[in-house]
Amino acid sequence: MIFYLSGTGNSKWAAQKLAQFTQETLYAIPEIMDGDCNFVLKTDERIGFVFPVHGWRPPKIVRTFMQKLQLRATHLEEHFCYLLCTAGNDVGLTIDYAQKDLEKVGLHVQAMFSLLMPNTYVGLPFMDVDSRATMLRKKQEAEKALRVYAKAIFDCKRGEVHLHLSRWPRINSYFLGKVFANYFITDSPFHVDVKRCVACGICKMVCPVDDIVGGFRQKPAWKHNERCLACFACYHHCPQHAIDYGWMTRRKGQYYFK
Image (cartoon, rainbow, N blue to C red; front, side):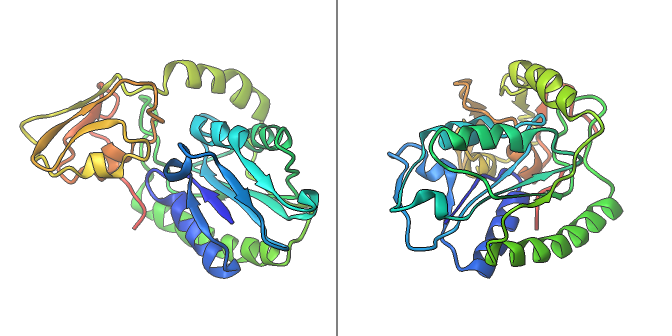
């Protein structure tokens, strides 16, 4: 089984590719989050987690899910467990956080991977989407890397570590990650330009945590219920570029996997 989270599609693409190669069942974390998160493992079934990096950490919904997860098996420790995260640049200590969360529910990670994908975070003045050339290069390189990762996962190769680490992963994840989590994962700055918005409802449809009120023929509004992941799926998918994040996204580009 493969549990995944995706906002703009990078992680969904990776999860779908892995599912095709390994013939494992896919589960979108937001769709099963409100259930009991209780699963019975088949013999030799692999356990995978695929998700984006948010502020050099796993997204909060992923961590909550991992802590809530209950897996039943005769010998849980014998099942191959792996993590794959997607990032625009580096992953910091994202995997460390996820490993610790999974250890609390009896899972031991035996392989870990990361893919560099087109950047999607545009919530700070110095952050924007990549150039078209960079997007294309990253996707091509990610596809090659994923084929290698998928073979290792299919073969249940323990000890595989392929991570994009920065020079200062602890600073990024512990210090900057804490600031990011406390102050930048919020829907408060999101607003819509009513002159450009055509009330198509796409933003509501693509939000992975159902944080938007509205829909077809209705102007969107954010719920401010602390569920927002700041994944920017709403911003990137808007066909009219009518959604902004305060002034941070003015004159910035859009991207989603296609």
